[in-house]
Image (cartoon, rainbow, N blue to C red; front, side, top):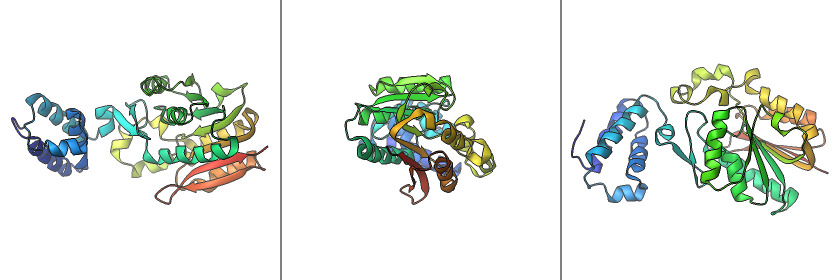
Length: 287
């Protein structure tokens, strides 16, 4: 396509090419930053430098992949979450910024319930890339963290991320609470699949064609896993205890009602995200 061009010219070509293909032009900058191993300001400072043929060829390949719909994060193999780098691939969902808010809200409630340095037991159910479990361990080193997933390939990615972020996590293969039986837990966190199959027609093909459907969709209008969690958790929790889950923005009342049914004395909260959409449900079980 181009040879012996400057970084500026390469970026200009890629941005307009992606716009023509109906993609976000900012993806071009992110891909180029990855190839050149630099950040935004570093890229801006090098705009009039020549780009090597090798880097240009790789850039063109990446831009073409994204034009065809492959997410930038799967092309580069990384995504930042809570200030840390996570490896991502097609076996796991790409961590979303909203889930960072789950971490913040969970920590606030944990500190109130247990104190700031309590050696509590936390389980992250459906860990995927390990973003929640690893972040909680890094932010709360005294906590003992277990992370589960139904997918062995997802757990392989999560183990790699734990190693890269120097987080000691007990990873377990299994469905929902199955790997947590015969133990008592202080905190349960989960960002389960919650999209109903009916919503697929409204979703971007970038997500539909590349991210794992087992981590996106759930039966019963996306609610089945919350219902099962609410039913299965009572015998597994200590007192006090905390449950925190991420939800679809229309699922707040339904999910809250599942937990009210299983924990009638608990304090149930539906929390909004930064965009003022219902995004989390927390259930505090007191002594």
